[in-house]
Length: 273
Image 1 (cartoon, rainbow, N blue to C red):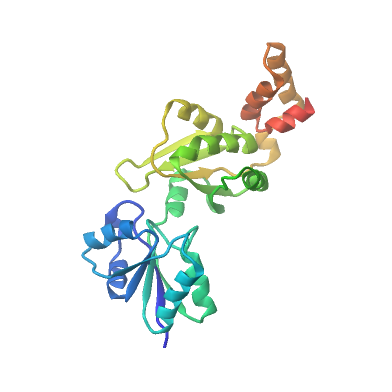
Image 2: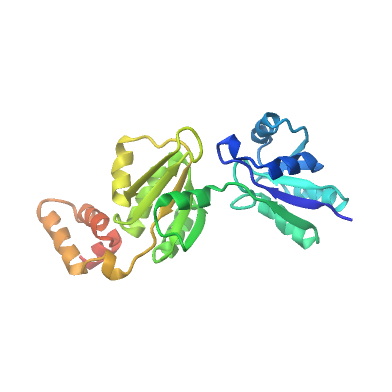
């Protein structure tokens, strides 16, 4: 009889958020798969859990995954964790879950904190509908295609972002979604320096011109509202563009400035101009 794969959530920052069930399962399983064993060993040592750790991350091979599956098929129980939060969501562990399902292995969840749900609750937005987008693709074409796809999304969108990429991401979001979209930037959730900043996209860009992004971010972005609520008539927007051009601004700079204020895309205004 095969064993069980347990998807075990772990704290996203504050170690007091670990549950009694999580502690019990991590002690009882035969081995634990971790995204980064150096991170997980700190949690296990703190909780006095002595158990075998097996590394499984985004660079692990299919053979690495198969060895884990073979151990579960032989009757061993496995717990899978990520560095923080719920594993198998934008996480290498999803590969093991699929392989377990393919092999008829029972998979159970031991839930814990998630940065997605925590940020959604803190945002102050209407999150009856939201879409989790994880990290935006880094490469130019993929990135543009993803943002173009999401431009007309009406549900709240939630993203993860690293501090060194935050400014570029906010700039691209303002370009595609317009500067008036509301945004909540949730930083270092549950940790000592937890912070939630609520801006428009345009104001977030101004803020981070003089403030260095620090810590891991969860971005909660307002979905598209009805056209009448977010966009004035394009002719009125073009009047603003022409006024700036008449004052000596370059057309591209004028379109960019007005796009941040009106919700039109810079390229949309430039084409109309």
